[in-house]
Length: 407
Image (cartoon, rainbow, N blue to C red):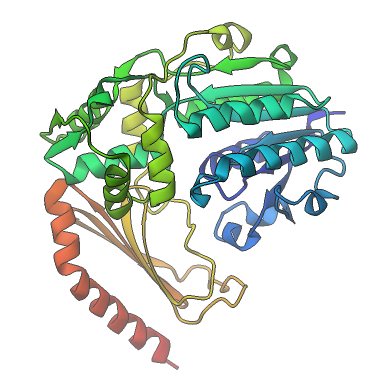
């Protein structure tokens, strides 16, 4: 079967990794089928009309009946941390359903992205679940390539966004004693490189590969390293005994990471996340590692409306406010979508850019919508946004009302 004929199934299609992987697959000539519980969340993606979409829930085996028809290789990029307590059993059941359906359909290969931790040590439930998920996938007959990764440095990564928003906001960052634990962050580009390389490199089948960058940092050093590149003066002091729930509440309040996911991630930081077995470098020599500083600079360059995934472009609500990929985003439509994307009028979109001492501001508008993006610079940027938010909203709403009243 030639490369341009292969059909690749990507599960977890609304997630961060899939949003970076799918364009890479399409650019390389693969046909792509995306599996998602809520396909409407994909409508804002630039590649939406270039893929086949299946609405399915891996927790229900019956919904997977036709998802694998004609599929050569499938990616398993699913986690259930957002469900809160009880997600571990849900994850294992989902992996079992996925592996069984893939085997029945004659799928040749499963590629799975899990978490990096030492299974022989005491690790958080989230990390244990990621490792057990890989084990369940391997119980079937379909060959599995499993990659295990820790912190992913890239705009939109939940671990990176947690670091970014907390470091931007807090001149003095309080943290628990385990901020001294070690991590080996990897750039999102390299994660995609590994996932893509596993498609054609058969040497990786039935292997488990720990992947990370070349440098090892403490979690404290990750935050201070980000601050240095951003030009922010930051200090971090360690306080023993900070409850996980309290930290997760704070992260959920000021970052794009919801509380259940923040809690699972923070629990995962309580142990080292470093590469102890470096076979991936030998099996996949085509992957050239990018250092952490370059990955951070690339992520910062992508904090721009042209690069941000437009995850807000679905649903029935006219006005949406989200924190996403380093920005506060306020979006308003002239009419609710009611399940359909509003048709844009090509050539009539206008974007204004404003540089302030507190961050960058963009206002983008066309005949059907208006979107305000604000990328804050440090604590003054956060204060600027929240103190002036009512003004932004009124100006935003008033401008759009004039546009929609025009004959």
